[in-house]
Amino acid sequence: MSEVAMAAAEYFKNHGVLLRLVKEFSSKYRSLGHFGGTVRLIELNQVEQADLAAFLRRDTGRTEAISFREFEAAWGKTRFGSLELCEFILALLPKNFISKKEERQQEQLARDTIHEGLMKRHTSSYAHKWLQALADGQLRLHKREQYLDKDLLHIVATGLDAITDEYTRLPIFANYVAGNPHCFDMDQPAGRLLLQALAYFDGISVPVSADERTNLLYKYHIIRDDILNFATVYGLTAYTKTGKELIYWRKASETYSPLNIPLREISLAERVAPINDFNVVYIVENSGLFSALLDKLQEKKQIVPLVALHGQLKAASWALLDGLVKSGMKLKYSGDFDPEGISIAQHILSRYENAELWHMSVDEYQQATVELPEKRLKKLSGEVHPKLDALVKEVIRRKRVLYQESLLDKMYEDWTI
Image (tube, rainbow, N blue to C red; front, side):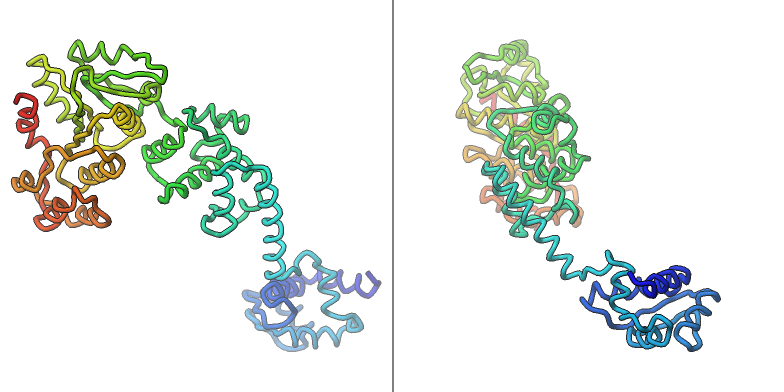
């Protein structure tokens, strides 16, 4: 830098309002790709107003609009006028003058380079599908800078590579992938991106609730919470992949006792079946009805294969139902005649061809008297399974709720005929 340029740089640095003016034009440069346009300086104090007035050779106030043409003309009348203004500004703040277009091009080049490297390293179908979705813009990361975080993307892709048909607990899975058992926790970037990828594969939005997240991970054989996630059963037994019976299931049934089975135990079972000659398993939505039916069964010392979902489909519920279907069991589900109960029925009927409704008919619904709020009715919008179509239309028409406890005696009668 020449002596004149050095003197000009010193002068601008000693007069903050002039340096501020240069920085404003640097921002304008990033938008335009060249020097030009007009900038505004606001809330100028008296010193700044005096310095700016001396430079521009005109009166100034607390707010000033200054065009680059005026700036350039004023510059030419100073002792630094022999210097090209644009060259001086570029030398004064060299890092400020990449246009937004150039910046985007550089960022895209870096992203393409990282993507190409990851595609070569991660060839599993899951990793490839995820990386391709990012490249095509079908899937967007939570933060823009994550596209350039090669280490983070590598960890997530490695996690997708590691998904197999064998069930693995989340901390063990994370430790195997990254040497850190907490790397895929839901409050960590890698955990959020892994969940986003799995949701994309399933064509759903990223789940928010803990149970929905657990369910999604379980679908890809990653077990997040295997103790507090459970289903309640009665009259069932289970078998491992080698055909070995998990005898404690049977022992509970033989003593007419229900069993809360956590996901960690259900995941050991390849098949689940009744301990007697039933070829159908009865499923109820809530634990209250399950207990009421169990009271009647225990009183008569009857064993009927019965499952309680506890008001929602958790990973344990899906694992249990999958095991029953593998044994060739027919599933009969009964839930409340309301949007939540119908939603569970929808999920079960959509997933299992051999599933049926149990005491959820339009005729039985006619005894409904409790008013259903309009807000809850909105949950019934969307595609409806054919087996539920008539019922949903009737619920929307009548706007009433019927709880399955009202049909308790009719349910029990099915087992006494």
